[in-house]
Image (tube, rainbow, N blue to C red; front, side, top):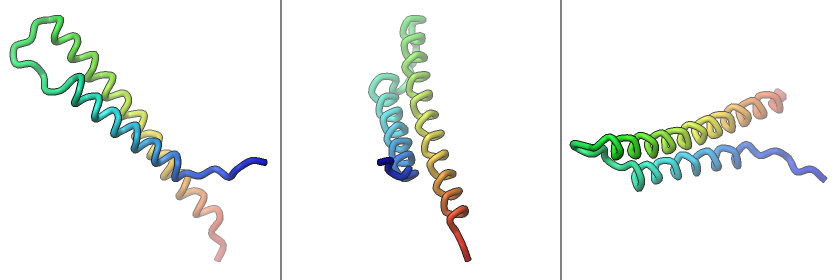
Length: 79
């Protein structure tokens, strides 16, 4: 009935989120303006923060997947 938990999927979803956050940062935040108005600076900061948060969540997911994979391999290891 229940499928086994696969840490590989968690790692891949984390890598996917890191990639999406990076691409979002390139497309919407991009390179900061040279002499921005306060509105441009606020918009750039918002998009940069969103990109950073998405990449952070992706990194945490990928690291947790790696930790679960290592834990499962150590627990199932029987000499």
